[in-house]
Structures are given as structure tokens and as C-alpha cells.
Image: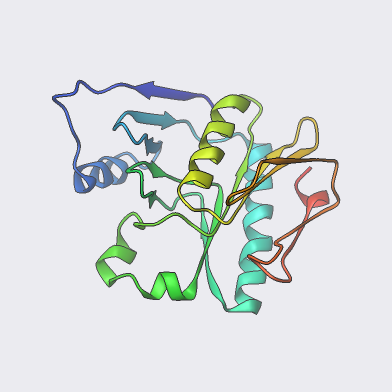
Amino acid sequence: MNSIFVQLNPDIQLTDRQFQQLCQNNRNLNFERSSQGDLIIMSPTGGSTGNRNGRLNQQLFNWSDRDCSGIAFDSSTGFKLPNGADRSPDAAWVTNDRWNALTVDEQDRFIPLCPDFVVELMSPSDSRSVLQSKMKEYQDNGVRLGILIDRTIKQIEIYRIGKTMEIVDRPEIISGEDVLPGFELQMSLIW
């Protein structure tokens, strides 16, 4: 998916409600917003990436339904990070206690927190450095476990809070570690 970065004039500042309305009015596009307020417009994914995203979310949702300790989200969910950025990871998960601490209004808008767990799946046209910056942003904003998947070279980058990024080549399974106890992402469905 090719991304377009739109720098807004400093005089143009979209409120959170205006940004959410822009997203709702243009459902055929995926928007994110940097912490500086710049718009990031992403086209829909291709078929292979869409299928793998579905398989990824299927595994996360199935585990979340069995575990019941949190809420899983797909790539259409927006998160308002503590640094002000609005991001939509390919898959995300938030503990029940953090989710239940939100008001109904907060739950219905872009969720005002950084997820506990995020996954980004690289599309063939994605820039690795841009996605690595996004993963670092999640890490800096409190994600407890983040996974960046590069299908082309079958490599995983693991981001943990307060730790340096770890690279794993050709794993068969990725564990949810202590963030998602018992969760195992079967990579054969993703590669």
C-alpha cells in the first residue's frame, strides 16, 4: 500500500472530531495522522495482504474470545496515542481494565490510548523504515508488545516496552509472551 503524506499548513488544524468525520466521509481510504497533525493517506491493500491480515486477525480474535482478558481490534480501528498521533495498526488488543476505564463516548471514537499489543503486516509496497518508525512510536507511547511482519523475507521484528527491538528469522510461531498469555500466532497462515 502506498502512503501519501499531506503536510497541513500550520494554520489548518483538524480537531479530533473533524479528523474522525474526514475518515467516516472517505471510507474507501485509510487515514492516519502524525503527532504533528500531518495526514497520512493509505490506499487499500492488495488481495494477498488483505488475506494475510484477515488470517492474522482471525487468530487474535479467536484467542481473545477464549481468553476473555481483553478486546481485539482490526485495522479499521483508530487509536489516539498519548503523543497526539492517530494510528490504525493491522491488529491490536487492549486489556479489559483499560478498555472498561474508558467512557462510552471514548469507546465509540478513536480510542484514546496506545494498545497493549499491536501488529503491522508489511505490504509489498510499504516502506520498511516508515513502518519501523511507526512501531517505535507505538513503543514510545506504551505498547507492551509490538510485532512487525515482513512476509517477503519471512522476518519478524519484536518491539517490547523499555527494550531494544529483536529480529527473528523465519519463525513458525510468535508468542504473545506475558502480554497475551497463551496466544500463539501461527506464521504458516501469514507467510
